[in-house]
Length: 66
View (cartoon, one colour):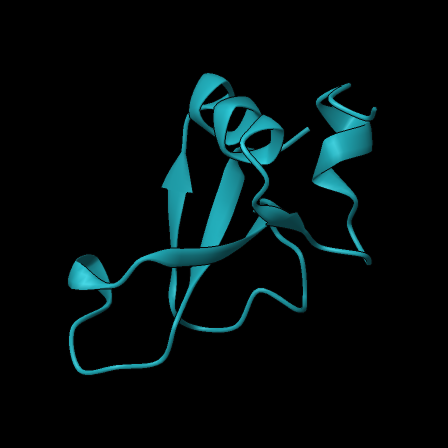
């Protein structure tokens, strides 16, 4: 699996924006405003309620499904 990525809200500077969705690296729906994160951070974000992409399913690949 590629590194997880976070999709951020549109804005002027993507580094200052809160993430809105977790993707698997290379997901075609991630868009241009994204940044890589370690697997542990992606797991933490998913378990804290952040939305997972329905196309690449990072929650299933990281085994964080309920």
